[in-house]
Image (cartoon, rainbow, N blue to C red; front, side, top):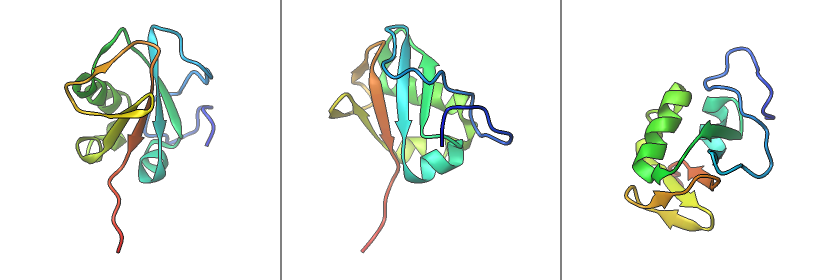
Amino acid sequence: MDSASHPGEMCAPASGAADPPSDIVAVELFAGMAAAAGRRRVTLPWKGGDVAALRAAVSRACPGLALLLPRSAVVVGDRYAADTDAVPGGATVALIPPVSGG
């Protein structure tokens, strides 16, 4: 889904920027998270903080993701990140929802 506003979306519209400026963070969503949010990318105002603060910001912007966020992996740049790891302004972050399979 693109970043244009759609009726019934579960989160605020994204700016659509390809490379985020240093005062925002671009959050890529996958699988069930993208479906729940109604988009694959969310951009948020961000001056920097840790992964836990980013999870809280995403939850406020996209309340439909609140139940998945605590169980989702976070990738900052090209590395998996713990809740205490820094997320600088201008970062691109991927949220990977829990998966199951056999």
